[in-house]
Length: 597
Image 1 (cartoon, rainbow, N blue to C red):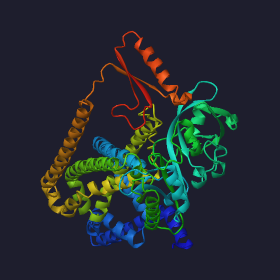
Image 2 (cartoon, rainbow, N blue to C red):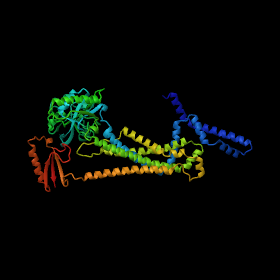
Image 3 (cartoon, rainbow, N blue to C red):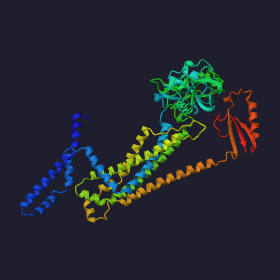
Image 4 (cartoon, rainbow, N blue to C red):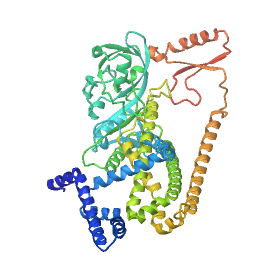
């Protein structure tokens, strides 16, 4: 640990460096003056004596550095000197500096964008307290984690590993708040949902497990913050207000926290409702054990319980359920996964895709470093006479290398800063982008501290990589040969080194171009593939009669009236009805009408 006296000494040395430098200069001048006096007494002219004294004294800067080190030079003072010198050198070559900074800005910016997306997709945990102990359930023989409500109740009540276990599912409903009915996406959740996640409402209060007293017993709504802001215009009087969901009255209890967007990655529900109301919008009977495609489960592990112990516990319960309900042929084996893309709908393909993108971004950065290394090698060769003169005047090779690395680090940090600024603009635009307007998909890829730290690390590593290229040139330089050879002299094996770097650049760029062409060609073929049906001049009109509380016996008559109305429109060639569209997600369109124009 650094003592207070040591800190005080360093602080004093920093602000007294000018006095120390003046004393050093005075000491050196006195040595030269004394030698000149001796030579003058031997019969030499004063001017000749001073010149010979300076020649005999040798490299003045070398002695100044040695004295400075012996006295215990201030590290911060040395760094500031190197920074000032590097800035002067870079300012003299604005073209080189701008090209280097822009090259690194594009490379580091591309890596920051890709890593920020991967961080949001894969690495970043859900925005809930104690996210480290939160795990989602997934079946051991498939990527799905869906369960029936009856299975959820058994798993929740019989397990000894979870502090709490919650269930949830996405549902699409019709909301009538008294102005204009609208379609909303809700997250139907078990009564312990908010309490188990340790969340606190932004406004009002949440529903709880005690509110569940059987089917349709908890007609309550919790609004998401964004939906409250956009649809209810931050009206605090909304708490206690009665609205209608699929024609059924529901009471608004409160508003969820500002930064909480549910437990499905990138799917931001607009409202939260209790699961026990599931039958009210045409859902399966909650007691139907075979309906095991409905709810997903997750929960916090108890302190000291490991994932392996939890899996063993769940599999034991699953074996008991298989014996108790032999008609349900589903295998009840489990895995624990983090509640991100690995345990979400998109699964492993997205992880593989992100890994490929990260690899390509890394190759871009390597190509940029090879390019800058080549530039730095050429620049060092062009400055060979300057370096040789500094060595001949007594400057040490370590000091020259430190100056070169300082230039490289300044360029890399400037390029990294510019790249991060550009990536922030792009990432904010991506976060505000709604790729699927009909779905509440939110790609929250705004950079966080992790992204900035990775960008800084990439900038530092890049500076070290291309800054190290001219090291051997400096170490192998013979200052006397370079000075005697004149301005045409070059140091090191410039042609060989630059050729190697050029080969590396060409190889990396060839890989990048080939990969890009393959990706673009694959995308073009997928857009123009033959799906087995004609989509030209086809319009889709979606309806959900359940949102209007149509009973099953009234649905066929209403569908017939809708088809007849569409057929009567001039220009309509044919009309069809389908409950599931080609290539559509399961349950995406409960009732749909195809119009052929």
